[in-house]
Length: 197
Length: 175
Picture 1 (cartoon, chains in turn red, brown):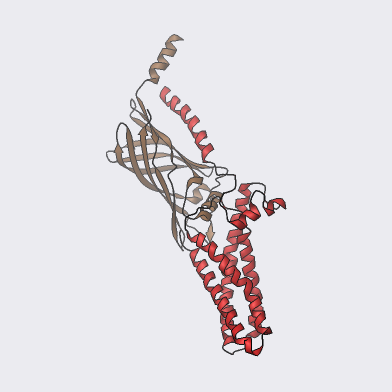
Picture 2: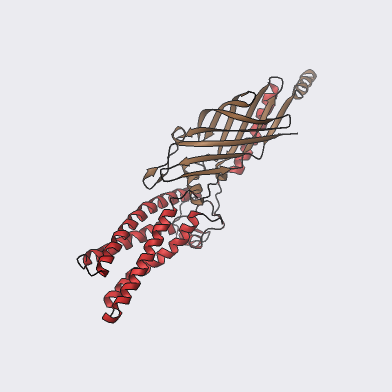
């Protein structure tokens, strides 16, 4: 009985000490991506503008919500982008019936994409960022590729309508190739998020 | 008073062995219709006490949630929020009853996870049991809903409620 009491007292000391060491870190991770550091670092923009939540726990809750919404909006944007590519291919093949739809869909695809991207880029930092290669690291890297593509597509489309008849086919080709490259990297990026690692 | 002190000191020298848990590993297995994944930790702390006079074992295990790694940083961060790790940073297990068979152990106790306590029964395979060390391994399932844990969703579908836990616990005698 006395032994049990002694052991129990010992455990009463051990358990709180281990809890102290096991608590999730309330400090920011060291190797967060550069853009996240600029926005959410100790002197980050969102902290200076007082946009940041009160503590790390609330930041991580906000992060979960933003990334959950990012997934859903990105999926919708990707679906719309596939349809937009189909419409674009019809225009290239000489069928202009869907010219107006291609034009209006471009606004839907672009705005949903940018909304989804901002949810991801502006999300508060996670708990840790390892240097190991993982599907999420490749996902993040590819995001810069398709973001650049998506940012330039409207300008490349505008170039088609402003190009002379001599330059038109090359302007169409560039627009089409950039759009396809963006669609492929975005699809691959989405597929990567289905992987377990 | 003298006799009381003498009795206390005599009792404190009664045969009892304490093992420190070391080199142990706990892995959870999650399931979603798109993929399965696992996360593990080797940060398993605690002690096992053996009372020789009563031939009785007791154990306490403490695992900090923040030490689980699934190979996906984003998922690990989200897991801490869903498992309320800021309010309840560790998973704790305290045994109520351990019955040692020849090659297995029947373990009953209480697991304290995400602020909820639940009775747990598991049968562990006994790999090594010597005077100075032990090694066991086993598995059991928990339901996230039993611990009031909101299940995260991926592409509109929630992960499975059932989580398989596999453990390999080793200990060396504390001298």
